[in-house]
Length: 137
Image (tube, rainbow, N blue to C red):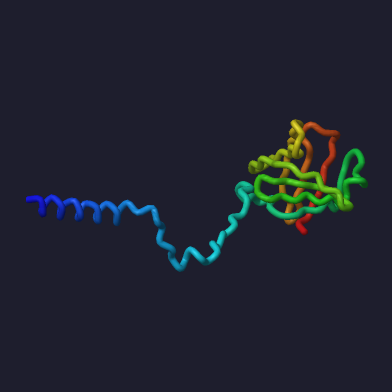
């Protein structure tokens, strides 16, 4: 009987030591550096405004000053600028309007837009009557 208890104790010891080992087995894959695939930043859905648009003609106050300004729509991101200056922010776009809120600013500007052929026409909702005529770059 004593032999049976010793045999059972040895079997239990071997079983638990094999299952409960803290040692980790090294696999050949572990030595290889992990390949991290970078996902593009979430920037929102693509709209028909997507891309870069440049003002070719303007009406209203400071019309000549605005000609040459580039609007860049990328999902929910919008930036615009001219001569090396860029004003980044975010935008909410519908079928006929878009907003612009500059990064770090609480003010939100609303615009109406429409297309006439390949020309994008935008007008501020609460502005000075400025109308911009843009073409895609």
